Image (cartoon, rainbow, N blue to C red):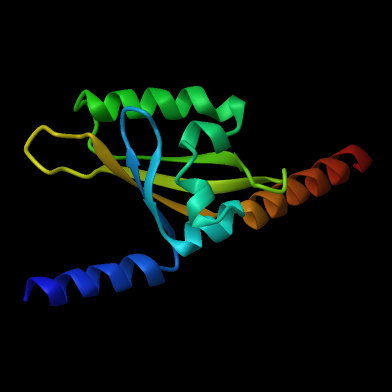
Length: 141
């Protein structure tokens, strides 16, 4: 029964259409990461296990992320979501929608958390293009 449950969990984790990672809440180091997350950031699983979320987060987005993690660790919030930028392995900047929740093993043991990411780069680019187009129309009127 437990083995079947573990196999089912592993299949869900590995085949999820969303990037999923288990991260050390104190250091930010990736402990386990699925293929989709690796595809989004362009690193292999082995390369990601040598990194932290701080290593791939855009500097302008890092403080907000750290502030949210602090609140999560202090128990002030039980989840957070934010749009942020990552640096892909090839240097490209991408946008993701990040959701973080603690991975509780006890009532007050938030040493690990789950990060789920969805690549929203195209949506952000489309919004920016529409804004530019609207601004251009406003200038010509």
